[in-house]
Structures are given as C-alpha cells and as structure tokens.
Image (cartoon, rainbow, N blue to C red; front, top):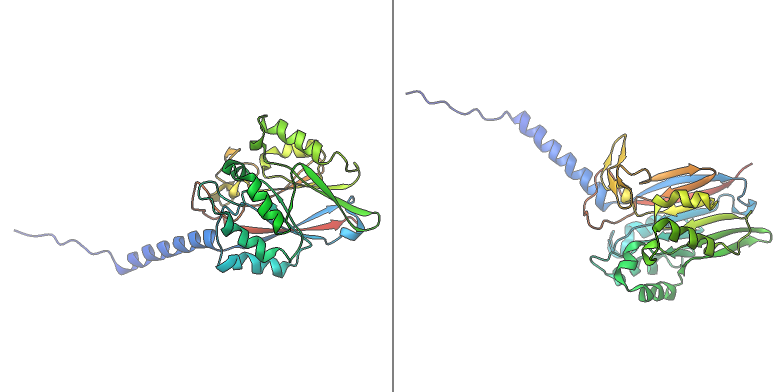
Amino acid sequence: METTKLKKPPRRKWFFILLIIGLLSFVIYKGNATVGVTRYEIVSDKIPDAYDTYRIVQISDLHDAEFGDNHSEVVNRVKMITPQAIFITGDFIDSNRYNLEQSLILIEELQFVAPIYYVTGNHEIATQDMERIHEALEDLGVRVLSDEADVITLFPDSSIAIGGIEDPLASGLEDDEAVKLSIEKAFENVPDDMFKILLSHRPEQFNVYAEQEIDLTFSGHAHGGQFRIPGIGGLISPGQGWFPKYSSGIHEKNGSHLVVSRGLGNSIIPVRLFNQPEIVVVTLRKTE
C-alpha cells in the first residue's frame, strides 16, 4: 500500500509570511507608539503683521496615554518646534481609565515652553470631575477657556482673539445649538474684524464655526478615523459615523478654516492602523 507524503511549504513561502507579519507589526507599532508632527500654514489678510509666522502647537485626545518617560517623546518634539502658544483641544484624560495625575505630567513638562490654552472634551465631562481637572490645570498655569476668549496683544493695535468653548455634552441642548450659544458668549466682546481662533473639541460642528465667522478652529475628537484607508481616509469616528468627513487635516468653508488633529491616544478602540498619533503645528501667515 502506497503512502502519500505531505509536501512541506517551500522556505520562500515561509519567508514571505514572516515578512508580512513583520511589516504589519511594524505598521501597528508605528501607528500607536510613536508620534509624528504635521505642519500647516493659515494665510489671511486679517492676521496682524505682528502675528506673521506665529507658531501654534496643538495637542489633542491624549486619553491618559504615555509616550516615553514623562511623555518625553511629545515633550521633546514640542520643545524643538519652539511654539508661541500650545492648544489642548479636549479629551486630555480618558473617562474609562481616569488617571489625571499621569496626564498632568505632560503639562508640568511643557508649562514653561509657551502659554497653554485648554478646552474640555466629552471625556472630561463624563468623569463628572470637572472642577478638579480645571483647578489642577490652572494651578500649572494653563488658561482654561470655558465659553470665553482672550484678546492677545503683541504690539499696540496688533491683536488676535483666542477663544474656547465647553464640550456640548455639558449642555442639555442639541449639540449644534449648544455650540452656537457657547461661541456667541465666548466672542461677545471681541471686535468683528479681529482674527478669531476657536478651540472646540468637535470637528463635526464645522458648519456652526463657519456660520459664526470663526477664522480658524482647532478640533480633535475623531482620532483620525481610528483606521485610515490609504486614498480614502478615516473609517469611523464619534459624532460622524462611518467614513467621517472631518477626521484629519485642514478644511475650508466660506473663509473659515478647521484644523482637525488625529490626536495622540486611544479610548474604546485601543489600536490605530495607518494612523500615527500626531502633534499639529500651525503657522499663521499674513497675506502679502
């Protein structure tokens, strides 16, 4: 009786299988444990001369993640950028594994680099610990913007407004109505012709930001769509669902610009794909 011997897969086949596994592992690692820097320019004739080349760093959606000892990977990159301002656009902590002290280390390391401005995200609201979060940030010199705006003047007759609003989860209103009312309150004493910057966690409210004639809005929340499909974009994000329109990058509508950070950390979905955590750098440029 003849017996049939099973052929062993050729070594070349195993080599390619291991190569694919190795490449996929590298992509997943890079997309979750390392931090990139993305740079944009915003050009406007409303930007005062004194603010030409004004450099802003945006940090969003940390979600209590750590990147090196004392957040060294983020801190070192921010210091090398030498910004004039640092914006933190919500979800600084994660309500599912709340560790405020761990996230505050990042602020301690950055507090003397540049003025820091902060607004809440939905995760801060969900902790029901807003007072402690705000007090801890303010103790470290952070400007917590709660439906209010600061007019920043570098030289006489050369000012811009930096405003921030609470996440609409804090309101019992529909999100768009809450955002509209918060913006009106924040900028009620700001001249109409002044260049207005808004910090607001939710990118899906871009229509409201444009209708309120905000010149430049910084948002996060979308986590870059969590899994990014090359040539298509993000797969899913809160508030926008499948294939979100505003998951990353810079967008324009009727002269209003929106910058969406992919953020740093993760929350319910613990893994990113083709979606490296990022620090955003925006440079203001005066139209010549």
